[in-house]
Image 1 (cartoon, helix red, strand yellow):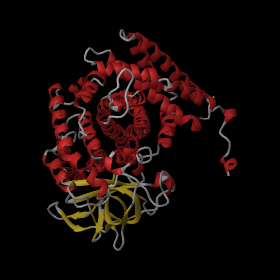
Image 2: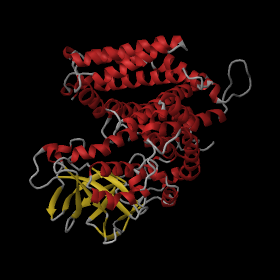
Image 3: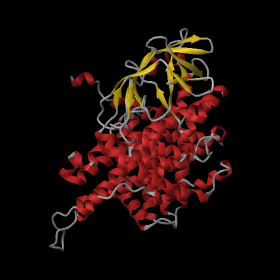
Image 4: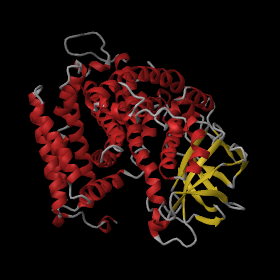
Length: 568
């Protein structure tokens, strides 16, 4: 079978003809339309030639503990050095600290490639990008100058440390302590599930850690954020002596085997030295800068892993011969069998909608610092991007195994790895149930539906202006009405919002995905494959919206889900 192929044509189409990346030119002096194609071309080479060959190695040869450090998968360090040398880590970083100052949407396009090629490896530079954002937004100028240049260059990497043994999603339960010590702090506590918490690929690792000051109030209002380096800086700003922070063990996971998920100990003896980021007791707000970045990034991971799985299924289906088709006595490739065709088109059309949403949200994110309406739209998109894309990734990776038949269930084929890797995506960075509650609570109820109404109005305006594929336009208008009615039912209190939230989030994803697919279909640059995907989507995927709407309505106040005590 062929190796991974970076979908540069589809990405460029989404950026230019759906997300309208041209809107960014006035806001990014270093960006011009002529940059898109060469950046995507180089991203293709890097992901296909440098990263993809290491994917199976990471699954079969996971990191290991060696002398109180984590030794990463062989070859990962070499690929990381190539990433750093090519300056991919600097793409969207601020120029002040050595970045290129380009739109985040281009960074997303690059990240899609390395995430498809090797999800485990990609998580290391991805978390560093989020840490850079948090430090740039909230840290003192002194901390920025001391740490950001080396993080932007990729010389140092970054992590986020939230979860503790008794504090998962409930961050109010955090117990890690931070004791003031002059102009620094000493941290004591344990963190779990820390992605790339330790490794030997970079000269230093900069941990962003949530902890409590001795006099902090209870709950989330008493959490502060600290920068804790693996190696303390010497008088020249270089990585010096080891800080009192160590990995205790590595988790044995279902998937993403090549990504070291660490249990981290802060302060075994003298305390891990850290520096306050932002204000005391306002650490969660500062960490949300990194978390929101990570949530859209996890949505991208769903798209990326699903794309890799689809490509494997497509290749296999065109190589594997079995049986015959009507009108021929010759053995046919299974891609010509009706049910396999159904699965391949289901994957392809869903991926097109996912990608359209991902890049539309990315461009909105780039515009979020220019206008409050773009910030509001970005905040609205974030839980949908994270939730809907990662749920679709479960479906697509599972279908890819199904296309392979029994061979898909055998690890040697490689497609089973993608199914295992994808399974973490609806869980980490806030489960999809949490994303759904965020959508209906913080994003819908908080502003009485104004942000969602604005999005619905835009979709309706677009639908009214579409002049091609009118049968699909009629379907889209019907879908938009369902979303509008579901939104109103949630706001009016006609349904139990906590129970209906997940279905509402999924309904939002299907409708927005259909809108953007059809938006692309109006372009004269849309090829026959895109139009066929749009048709299949509205015929066989978007119709799920009807069932989701009906389900939302049935979570009425007088039909609430019974207590689970009945299940015992």
